[in-house]
Length: 295
Image (tube, rainbow, N blue to C red):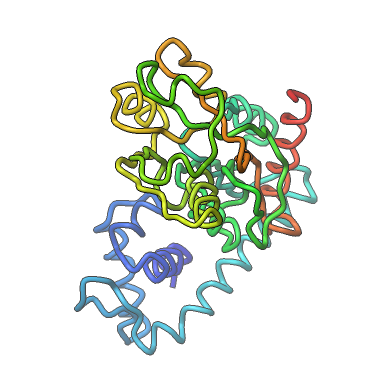
């Protein structure tokens, strides 16, 4: 029985897919399948049910899974103990980010890599809800996410920026003559917004619900620049951070909300109490120091 066989088995059990598991462990899918077959032959039982669209654990597989995880955790713990004693940090850190933000993340990760070259770093893009959930479950050590007024449970935060959320319209739009409007002005208007799962969209939905209506979303896109392009073409009112609109003032007009005022936050988030491993804790500490020095 080899550690890589246990690693591949745990990955398939978590992903419920040989293809996704292979991507997670950076091995070709046939290699993952072959190693798990060898593990099953050694144990004399099938660990995975491959008959459905998703790969499922058999009864034996479910019994073996906690032992496989414990074995991998023990090996990682031994490596970390040696690293801490020798002063060389090892392991893996996973960082997440939303699509659009103003943080020079490559510089942050490069500085961390210079200090800790033996730590493997991965970076994943996602929406704020996905990233927050991934932090709570340990999939990510930290992430840059967008939030409204509410803080998701189980997370600690450092605010990077806080800014107004505005209605963005083309210069020839009828709302362009206003400097501010009430949210109720948008009650029946076609809106252009980020999709559900993003902090900005959650803030918009909550504010509209409090005002007694559901937003009429005509267009959704995960890239704010696409929202801006749609608004420039007169296809609706885009809901965007004020700074993003200000950078496109030649073609977009930012109209503030005075009732209620909408504000969003871009934050660095990590699990309450800190990431589980020393490498994750070191990454969070380093990122926080860099953000503090640049503020």
